Length: 386
Image (cartoon, rainbow, N blue to C red; front, top):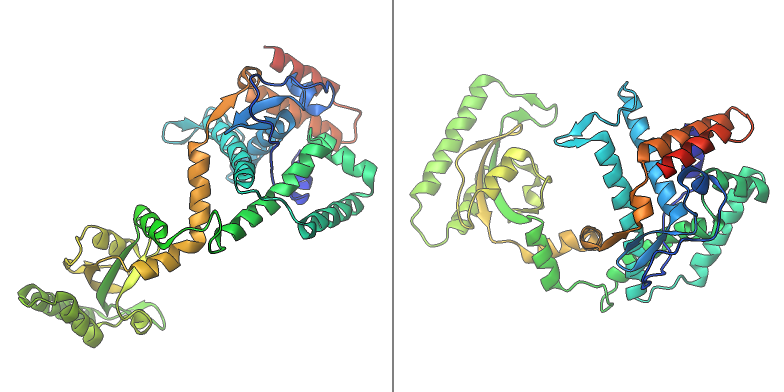
């Protein structure tokens, strides 16, 4: 089973979805053969779900189901556990819950990419189409010819049409990402949008005075006597800041930092750091986040030493530069989260566990070189009918 799914991944199955939205019903499809139909009782060309008006074919959904379940099994095996669908994996969610969430989110992401491409009139150019043809030819050759290529897709329940759309998804994403970086385009974010996005993502600007308690060439702790001296200096500097009564606290803090801070990064960041969540040591980030603009922290101890932190107004220029490259991925995540989903009731009623068990048996039988997957087929059809 794992060899089959590994082979599928080596085909670079990056998912894209059919744009057939706007229908008043779920197309039941016409194909009544293949692994997908055998194990679910639903035609592979049926509409499994609709995401923001984009129809997702059943073979696409079936592949996502088997992939997510296989990934979860591999994950548990890595930690020496057998696949246990009822085990609580994270607070309030079982392995089965997490796997179902993964199937839904992965499928939504593929549909949203296609929807965004439609909205922004993205059409793959000749260069992209030529690359796709080359990749297909290389894959066919690596698998031993057209017959083996089609057989490999058939093992996964995928039609060539669906697989072609899967491959196109990666190119659509790249085209969207390029459009988002093109000034004046329909996806290009203004500075105002990026500033707002940075604020939503928790970006902030803070300066600090750092007194090291480690030798940064070896990362060894300094001796206790030196650490006591550093702590005393930190207290002295903090007292000076507390006693300051002038109207330029930022300027005064900068003077002290320039003179006393032992942060080697200060030369490149003389006015402090502009950063988002997870980019600084936890103690520094938490203390900075707790401050209002223009406020100075108490002495904060981290792995590196003693910090005195000044929260400053957000450096908008640095924030814009910091988030421009990640803005599109954030936009995509937001669209995926907010996407409207309609599930085909027949698909919603499927038993994931029974289907994956039948699929695993079928793949293991095929990998052992035995004839067809009659037992797995019967198990799958029973699961679909139950």
